[in-house]
Amino acid sequence: MNIGVIPARLNSTRLSEKILIPIRGTPMLIQVYRQVLKAKKLDKVIVAIDDEKTQIELKKFDVLGVMTSNFHQSGTDRIAEALKDEDT
Image (tube, rainbow, N blue to C red; front, side, top):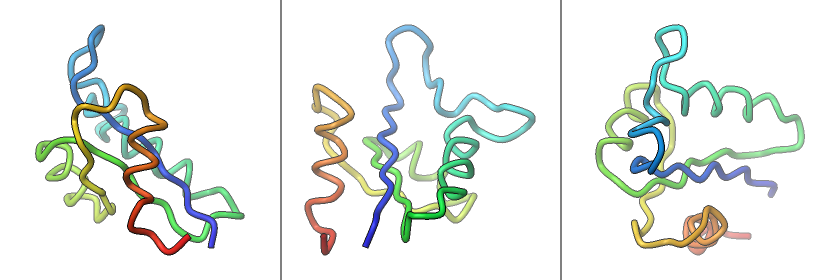
């Protein structure tokens, strides 16, 4: 199974909550998710998140969010944690 994982961290240093900023009325993270869904070789797409606010927003769009630690040093670490329980 090919799984696409989008690492998403709410607390950006330069632009606060940038993943939730609307682009044409839809949060940036949802725009990214929709583009990733177009990848023909992916069987599943999940979003690796670190806070409830993002989880609430994802649920509005029926998007799967996997809660991860908010102490990761990189997006790669977040992806690894999100995939830990997947059957890969």
